[in-house]
Length: 352
Length: 287
Image (cartoon, rainbow over all chains, first blue to last red; front, side):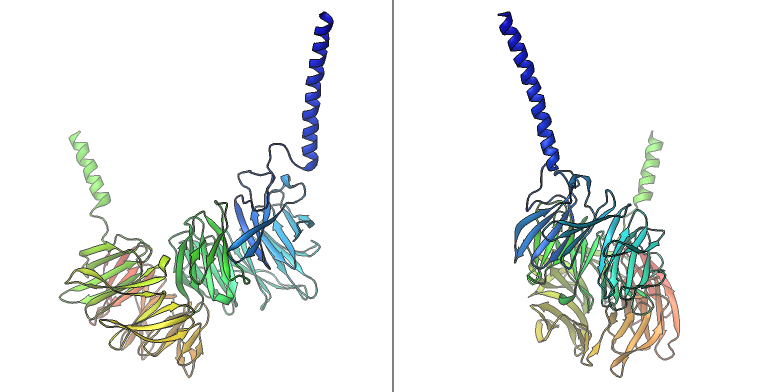
């Protein structure tokens, strides 16, 4: 009886010990896979607080910040665009993905996917298949990113909104130049024809121009000028370039400006918005400029020449980007607060 | 107790007053009909509202529209409102006769409204659909005139801009430029503060204003530019001499009587600034 009870106690202790070991080994197993039991691995087609996107060929890449930590990490969702249908293809994650916060920008060039990361200030380069091809720890918060092709070597340009610098690298992330500013460089564009980088700053109506030639590595000092047409319109939110002219959306008051970059940087006020605008897209072949308001759930469509507000369309779910596909002729809209990409037909203005 | 209630009442009265007459945000188009008094029509695309007031600032009537009014114009003592139903890609044209006191739907056209201008004996306007722009004329009825490829805006019955080319001269218009129609000098191009006119099939520099013009009015002997700095710049056509009158901030639209009384619509601080050009003075502001 006593013997049996001791045996029972021993068995119980053994069971508890085994259970403990099982849990520990399970934890170790999940950790070796890169997951903790509590976190959910994103699957193809998932969206979680997307902040940016890009189209390459027939694929749409959506950068998910996963701001609410629904998944183990932020990630890139890859979709195949087939007209209005979007087929989920895969998910791209950085190595040891739980450490990184891909809440910046995505840009694709020559089959390479460049993504800026705000947690550690990383720049990731992925292959289209999802492998990490390269990465670089810049520090701070690299936000905007440009890839500039040149015969003497390609250049990567980052705009760091924490260190207030614009950094120019070789393709192997060797730093060529670093330019410091007094305000965060929020938006950057490159003009191929004049070989100039234009920088729009947060909390300022100033724009900087960097004369930069990737062919010869010739670099001249950055110049700054105000784009405010009357001295009071201020605070750049985003800039976009078209044929030497820069379109800028401003914060106070909400407005659209045109900066003639071919001559003396003269500025024209083009339009006042009722809602705050966060981003601009120019679709050259459609002679169209889109102004996107996540806060007002609105997208404005302007014809560029003649300049004219053609339409405005209500898009629920806080749209952050509207990306045009040359292949399908459709616009893919990324709403931050919804789990579905929306598709806009420009001919009929039908939104699906 | 009674005393404090009176103070509160007086305070509230002082704060609220009677309220603004121009009770709409982002009013962006103004026109006038002159009868025994000046009647001013104001519309707001953002608020989908219309308002009819007298030139003295007395409210006649107001209302909401089931569409976005892009522009209003006056012709033969009638107001015309070009209104867009964005979700149906349709333009609705309303007329408002002050004496009949009704807003009447005069016509519906499929497409996107791109512009309108006074021409000969009516209003010419354009609607874009399926890659081409159709030109119409409205007097009592709407008549289709002709169509052109691309996105076009009318400048007169025979002059228009399609996809960045000014016709019939076939002159390229620069991106970011604003074109003001002028019956006397021909189309006026504004890029920022720089003003150019068409001469020998190209735009030549005419003058540099102190601020970027947002709206324009044409008179036989002078041009009026209403600029972003809040001034009406009066340019003598012969000498190009400039005189200025303050006209309120962000003057996006303006209209005038033949007696040169000018009503300027200010978009961001919704108001009408009334100017007397002959006396070269600002008469009043209607809020």
